[in-house]
Length: 577
Image 1: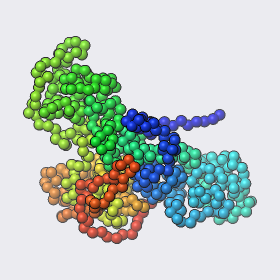
Image 2: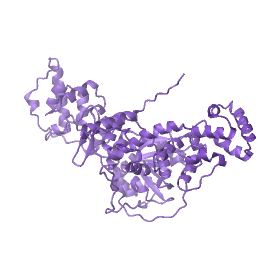
Image 3: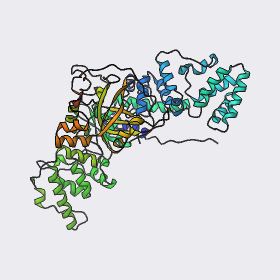
Image 4: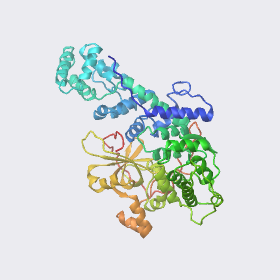
């Protein structure tokens, strides 16, 4: 009997949506499986991977993977295959990623015995795949690969493991292998075999990973449309939107005349953007989406109401997020909300199977004198209706405060030296407490601040002061120490504050009140020096440039101090908590 595991992978749907949008907007018939069209060793895709710029890439986008990729610096598909295989409990527990990275960057590979060099040479002496376990057992015991596969499967059975070890030591010892070699090999086999990866499985995962990387490098708007439509990864939609902005892909708001039922790619003045879908509106039904799309375009709120027949809550939400802004002339969104309520009253009071006799007074209604919604109110409406900050990034309201206290943004954290004290802030994007080799509990937090992602680790000695704040607030300010992880920088957190509380203190009592809450009596050290304005940005093949200077990081550093490079003894894994 043949057993098949059939996996539903939403990334496949996201990439299919992207390919369809590319065909619709450009006429190009793209075949992701054609290496002439989509080479798996594309230099622009690998530039993103080496930069750990992997949000939206299948299997490569988690904080732990970004950390591993930054240290590994993959140079080809085989490195990505190895990376996916290394990012597993067994290899991580055995310290295999560090060994592979060291060998990949020039350290001489070591082998438990010369007989195993042919088995382990293509992974620099590091055991990564099930197939290598099979070959190790076959080479050292003299059994065939079929029996070695049976033995490999026994590694997951604690009750059978002692008998398997005895068999291995007897058979391999009889072939002349010394006890020291047997000890070393058995440690590798027993710790890894039950948790390893089949190489074919890793290749099957690496192919869509590299295809999604190619799409991000060459057709980012199409990929983001697919990601937003099918939500295949670990990140909230607003993180995908923020990543799109950093890659100069405009996010176009919901519009009753331009939005379709799904997320679409739309031509803009400088390239392509992503138009938010009608289906993304909170509470909207499939029937309402179909009617709105079928009736486009509309020339007024009354026209929209009469032909699309929206429910009042749907119409109000569409008005609140600006989906009818181009229909309101000199009126405000509040004016449209009043008119929608009046139209709803007329609809309920007049019979006629949904036909609406529209009074002249409604057709010619002018401004009511109500003020327009301010930027904060618009942002709140977007977050409530769409769960996405569309008109501006959520952190923009806090830039002045962050400048005053000397916070550093994600884009410029990488310029800071290990050991420096730093303040970072952002929207909490994920919180994880994965098992790690030491057995201690570490809280991993990823913040998103508009310029990038910030990875913070809280060790046990900080939990009493920080854990409750971290788990119960969405906007955080964190104090900590910069740590180096290859070319990347992370922060070991020592204190955390609710950013909303700090913002309220500043609003009500001034900047000194914030400093008092932070336990300081004067300005903080200024953050990392930004890239000079004349410095060229790296440009990808689609013409997009790197991230722009972030507003609250535009300060000169007060100075730096040297520190020994320290490393976090873990790799964060898993899905957000």
